[in-house]
Length: 414
Ligand code: GLA
Image 1 (cartoon, helix red, strand yellow):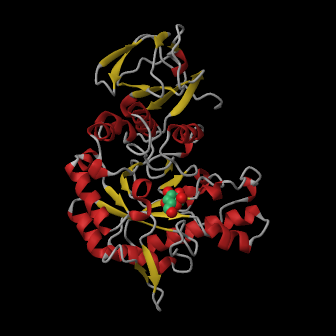
Image 2 (cartoon, protein in one colour):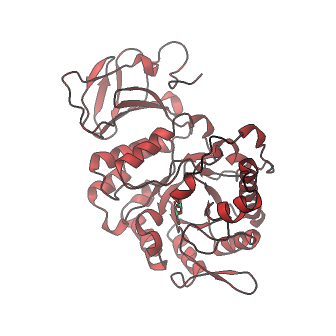
């Protein structure tokens, strides 16, 4: 919940926070490319139930999304019921038989994810895993769960602030311990379970996430289905590119493609930029009522190929000119993706933005593919580009002509 993100982290002395967690490698082979799938939260929130999860699994298949790579069907918060006398957590009435549900999802060739918190309660006030980590992990494995999103929530107030009042550094150590504890519990089950940390980027999680076995970690507070929030989150990813790679990804939060008031260009830009960031692609829309235009965005294979590129190198913003941002992502086999985003609400000018290829480490005219029109394009140095508000140009260069010397580096990097 956003309220937690208001805690100022800037004052924390990172150097004093040597993670006490055991060094454990991320699950071998897990999440070698950013996880792709669907999660219940962004559209359905607390209305998720067994029927909705089955419908989502069915829809991933009928829409072609599974074929495009969307494999995980993730149940977010509000599935939890009560613990019995033995401490066993039972799902609430919305989920009558979790094992049968997992079997159903698996029978479709898909994988299933679940959600919990290291605290006594989840963000939605449901039962968390505090004191029951091993028991819960084992139960997930018995059900056949393939993915866990572990959301800090009440652990902040009920554990960190109570056990270490006024000592932010100690609070952060407690947080890291809690994530390491669940990592050990998951590993002890012997079942490969993708481990997704949700703690809003606190304490530079990208620095220590891999040491607690995280395959991905949220790098910001919650996304909402509007351009402004999406763009703030996008901008906050600058500089994090060096922490991301196969098996351990920055997570700028789940997709809002098809949700809220974002227009088609905005949805295209959101999706393209998550691909440039090598972000997990977890759709969060109402699949049964998806429009053909939104389906076309979510299943654009060329854009998905950028996201899933085997090199696993997150893209970086190289420069901005007014409200236009230019990002590049280096891809396998020497290829490169270039994204030019018009973040302005109304940029029309008789002096349009000019693309500077030299700043991108390129020389001479470049031939590539526009990944939204599918057409071959030629990029020339200093060429004028007129982009509609909140739209982008996304081009893949299979054989970029590189300037001699070092590849382009983002502004401000060494
Ligand atoms: C937090 C998370 C969201 C979602 C909700 C559920 O806000 O960041 O992604 O999981 O909790 O309560």
